[in-house]
Length: 230
Ligand code: FE
Image: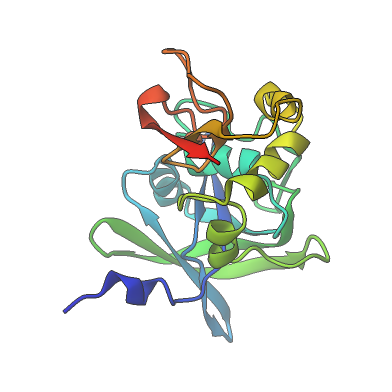
């Protein structure tokens, strides 16, 4: 038998993989970065074949892996985790840097980064496994790394969030969270919310306009589910 709950007990972090394919930067969020040897220092990462980042790494032979900080925002995770590098410049809204090989990476909301030169690529079915030599490694911050469990339980990732904890993040964010602010003025009582089933973003209002799109992951109204908080 295969009990999928067993897989959820595996510990892993949340990482941003970036690379450059010609003039175009590409990046995505994964939970599949693993150190495989220390002498020499080698890591591997599995990236979905359909992802523009996998295709870009295949062509460039290099990637930077940053370890996301525990306080990384849903705006960052949403931009890199739920949108395509072919459609938007994911790097535009964030502080970036380049490594010695010229590969760009997001230099904020991360606690470490690794610059990797691909040594071997293994086709594992739906994903490509990029095994590579670490050419540069450094700490970027003193904070704790984000774990996948924390992302789901506290950040409200793909698993439906504790609405109150996510609302805190939304209220702190710089733009387009009027809904969260307005909710503070409402009388106590049942509140209607809409939760994005893809990224967990919550909007507090009775109805969503037909042209509503998730500010985090970009999906339309049909991907939101209505709920009532008593
Ligand atoms: Fe979303």
